[in-house]
Length: 383
Length: 250
Image (tube, rainbow over all chains, first blue to last red):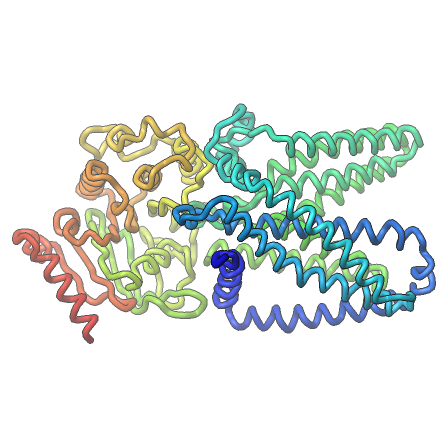
């Protein structure tokens, strides 16, 4: 069909327009700085793989279960994200008036999704094969191929599931105008400036729309808090509940923080400063995060009263991590998923380097957070 | 009378590229400035620079005597900008948006300059009452423009800025908004900038006008010239078109 490549053309044009809109200095930073960092990371990974090669080669659990599940899960995530991206372009509002049937749009999205999936699959095959060759695993190429097949299976399954139900994407857009449920936030969201959280969370007229996603997330988090608390109380140890409180607390904060109002001229042309708006946007997710933290922290304290410093330290770390993520969330204001990935990546990388170079690496992380905060503030003030 | 807006040698643009340059402009209370120009002439860039949405490359902007660069929050309290309709927070209802803007400006949601308006209630005059509790996402372009105009008037800022806001309004609403702008500026407490492509509306509404071309002010009309042009039907449009054609030919 002649329209089949339309989604890919749209995405290509967006990419080119995005690159053209960037300053050459920024592009150079990304290309040179990012390239340098990538080369360093690859070298570091190769050295680490070399060092752990004998152990990795013979770890049956890793080869039979760990890696297959990881590649399939990665495939699912990538397939879901790519199909959503392509569906949103195939069903874009400006294409509404064109005489394209829903099946045709789905096919356009499908072609785009699988075309985007191909380079990802190749990359997985090459990376897995290369890693196997580095540790001296026999049949490295076959392992690479196997990893690519698992990734492709996960990718294809998730993409097909999503492409057969484009309604899921369309319903999200329609929910902006549908008032369902009650305005539960009315009291909480009236702090100055009022209605900012409703705006950030895209709640239609401040009404929370009940959904299976919201219920499932709430259930899982509650379960995690209860299991953590139970583990601590059963073992008379503060550790498990404190860790559950910290991990769940930061997860609640990351899922709750939305900062897209920071990019709106409604605020940027109003007599209100960046810090004020930022703190207001952080306020409600922080309250939710601390509310989640209280149950496991209380259980940790009850399980081992003498180790009171464990839940206290856990609470302080929760505040620090929430503060750091709030900066990432504000910087990537229109892409919360990218903010979460970047934050998780930065934390993982800082933790890894801390093992090698000690805690001085944390100064680098703090500098990154400060730099992002400064750039976000500048963008708010100057566009 | 003190100047509400003072723009001196302003240059501004995007990512280091200058789009408007050498702009000198001042407005006093009572002034209604018509900002005219072809597409891409720099009208919106000038308004973005004056409202602090893009950084100044050169020059200065002072609103009600406060330098925008030195004290942006205080300076921004001095103007009300009617946000472009597509930039309004679509999920909030009209009432919630008004409450949001009012809480930012530190005023009550009903703190509108109704004393200066003949006929009172602005929401009634703009036929907004039946929409006010619906999400903005459900509004038509014109209804969005109306809510943006009401929000711009909240807290009675001395400078009112309308960037092509009149374009999407129905005839009744456009007429009402023009009456509101005229009445507010006639009270001597406000000044307004009206950027528009509706050239014929300018002599009737504005007491000053400037034409932008290639990022600078190419021609201006004072109150007497506008009044003179307004007396002969089509005279003002002719002079604007002539200026635009001369500019295009140059």
